[in-house]
Image 1 (cartoon, rainbow, N blue to C red):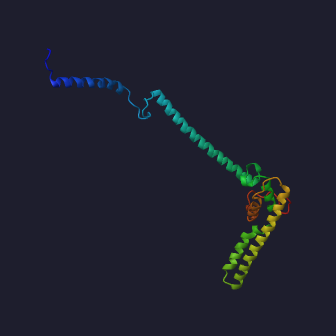
Image 2: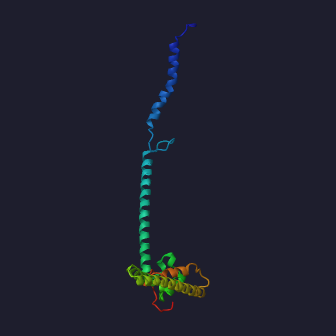
Length: 208
């Protein structure tokens, strides 16, 4: 009837029901699409076939990485084996970078073709050390003098060898990079002949 007042409870209850109704209607629709924990945040859940294909691609990628790492290790091992054989046989194709080139080969052959005082340093050092350990004053004095003589001979021989090698390299390879070749040769002269790598390819007295 007009003018009749409605209870306050009825007004508030009906309005609350009307506001909650759309939310209740939307809830079942949203509950059907469960979010995959692996799906990116804010994106729809991928289909099962898409998720499986993604997992397969990840597995294939990890497998290919393992194969690539294994292949690299095998190639590295094969390269080291080729270098070892080249150091023993003198094959220029597989030598390490520090030993490659005609300049370095000429420097090696020059050292290997002659006697070097420095290559006898190790056995002479053992003899001098034994003499210095003997409790005899005269022998210890001789050992000290031998140390001085050996050092002076090594320095003089290295200076002469370096000067001659530098001159011959300039004559033989005027247009090539000769940097570090003399130092490379002098370091080789400090090693005993049978311990040198790459192995000597010339005999003593043979002109390179």
